[in-house]
Image (cartoon, rainbow, N blue to C red):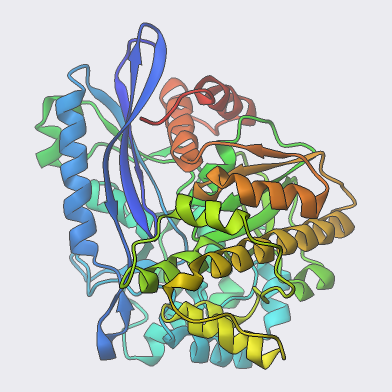
Length: 476
């Protein structure tokens, strides 16, 4: 690939989306972030919390066209990663029926209860290995059914929808499909039994493809740009977490990972899923890994808590994250910690009030209100996260009988050295800070491996080699 065509990566985030370009200069890879824009759901009142897909697509198109201008050598491929569970419903012509729902919409809570009346949660877990959460696609699809949307309306998860919008056929990339709660962990295909038991139309689901699958050229208007004349659309590991873990420059072994962003995901890479009653009771999930393995982790609210608080403080004072970390570091450890498994912390809204409501409910002293108390909230959140990381890693050690040697932290939270220090103290393990843009590195690594290997399944060694080559590359 050295001195060859460039690669383009789209990474969808619940808080920000990015378009990046990998180019070769003097036999060395260089990655530049061509476009970044903020993202977030909007409250549409009776129509619920939804994503502004029209704006997302417009921004992505602008980013790709900028990539075309910056890469006269041509662009070999485009890959897309993003958050899981959310999807787009399509009409008979393949056009969106409506803006997609956000997984935080409250409609899923009652849908989850209704699904469990048909199939007990423990049965679903035994079949899929996926943590029981109202955000899972299975509950969203059931909520569609209850609202009158035809079961037969085709659907496609959001990263794969972007590929479809760019010209690819409608598919479900395996790592992303595992997060739907509809994949049989043994067969690695759609569970006909679950579809039937819940009353969902199996025919509306996309075809499952492996990580790194090439899906053909982009649509005609993009192909008319010289840079995209020979481009292939590639489904990398479309689940951003799978790409982020693939972007860690170490082969799977005795290390644990923390994907620290909107959510904090604490886990390890295994050969097979763990679907024991103990894993179910502790809320752990099993998701597809980019190399064919299994991501075994537990998800909890992460920087979401701080961001929701900061949206309130910005009304009176624009606190920066760096400033908050520095101020929190000067404070003593809080006497009490948050219960991060509290479902009340999941929806958007007044997070300060929710934190204090929880403290009162637990018989603890609430924090002062107002933006002047911002460092106290940040300190409470950081200490609570580190303590929960420690307890989750002990859970993993007990269930897998493997003690990790160290922790690899990826994502935006990896830059928080104060939280890293607290994590090392709470876990007793060294913390290795990996790339803030690890999902982009994983995205590029899988594209690169596919370009060099035109057919067949990508080998774990091939992916690892590409990640190692990109490990020291900074995303400018």
